[in-house]
Length: 434
Ligand code: GUN
Ligand code: FE
Image 1 (cartoon, rainbow, N blue to C red):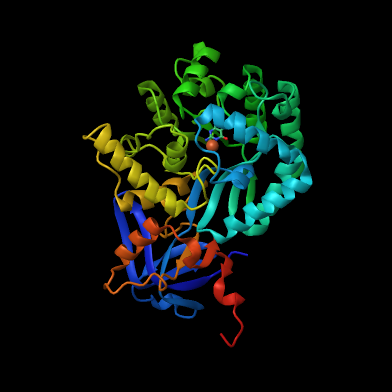
Image 2 (image 1 turned 45 degrees about the vertical axis):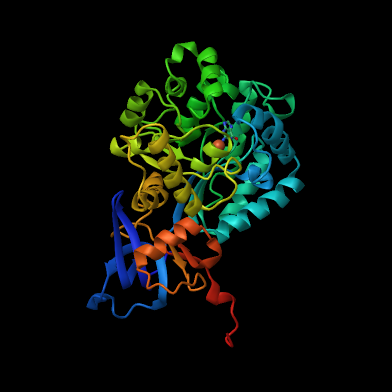
């Protein structure tokens, strides 16, 4: 049930990429699951509402992960001395094949869901595997977390090992429909998203069928784009008609416009590709840690921001080692500094404000009015009690937020709310004597 209440604390949220609003000891008013605004002193009209006073803690919008792979959580932090295509063949595909076994899937996805619940993330777009039943199981578990997520059964029918390939485009489409029909009406917070893995593993015929499904079920789409140079060259061979990589999605009507679309990575975009993405409002999931671990490169995020394109952050577990979007913010800043120094000194690195925007309001807009505390935004909030991060310095709230981003230590999360519903509050777990 969406609720009506007030949270008190040091409230920080993005208004725009460059503007961070900070209200010390402020009041964040939630009316039926949405923000009614932030005040330094409480307006009379809200005087009777229940207040949870988080004292000197920070209150920030819930973080948004636009791209991660739930089945890959098992091997996070391992086996990354490889580039994308070798990594997929040696680490990823053998692991994903295990999710045919529902018992294994249950064990693995329970661990994943538990970690996501504890994290600072309130919204996520998640790849499962090609297995319909395990994907439904993941959706059941994500629903139990209280997070709002979009989860995709992966489609892949070519250029992958026999043990992890749908045998034909027809079969892949059939399984997708069976999955969608099986989960229809089952969840409040968990939505399906169409998930062709990437062009190398999806035949033209499959893409045509996925477009039909997309139209029939009115689904958004998530996939990968222009991540790795070898991958891009391969797509040119597979789809010579496409002009550029993104054209291979666009040719099937699965590249933004009416179809809400997230493309992960976009490290090596061509000019025409960038223009088309902007025109179509395609969302970029910037995954800096994955792009570093898999030696993919550094995405031109400054340019994406300057052009006003839709962009947010992704952890891309297990290209990235963990689920922290604070860490993704720090990584985004750090790789942007390297890009500035090593590749293009005319493109300034990202600021803390910009990285925070990407991980909240930037990605949040994929879900609607999400990722800020401006009036009317769905109230996703994370309360951070950073008292254990001791310092003799008199730190400002802005400095404390910067430190939380760089330290990326999510052990200090005290409470989490999604669309006005409380996911947890550590105080709930304490006995009255505490
Ligand atoms: N491209 C296709 N599949 C994958 C995947 O699992 N991870 C990443 N990073 N890129 C991909
Ligand atoms: Fe990925």
